[in-house]
Image 1 (cartoon, one colour):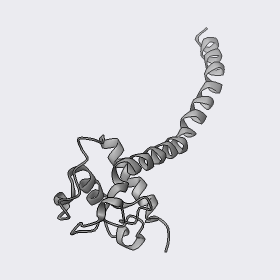
Image 2 (tube, rainbow, N blue to C red):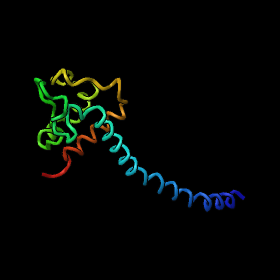
Image 3 (cartoon, rainbow, N blue to C red):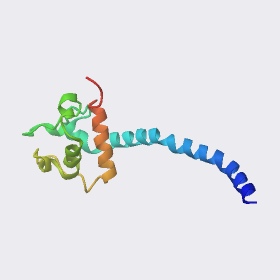
Image 4 (tube, rainbow, N blue to C red):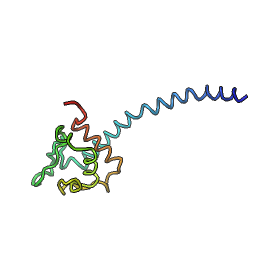
Length: 132
């Protein structure tokens, strides 16, 4: 009798497991795209004033700054920065990585997930993960 129940249950669950696998596998790309879009919006809201709408370090707030903001579109320059350092600079501010005190800490504004996603976004902006 258990064999009949197990067999019936197996036939019922097999299509569901395939469906669950397909649903679980598919959103990763969608989630990545959504995270990139959200990070782009966060960048436009908080970062572009200094780092520029073109991500080139030439934002509207840079006039008169003694230290120019980092050019996030610079593949070579950005590629030399470890991910941990980028994360720390965003989370704790420029001083935490021996850079400008003008770069504020964002840990009271952005969640850890948003900061992690921002680092991934910056790696995309600089094309750091593409062969040169």
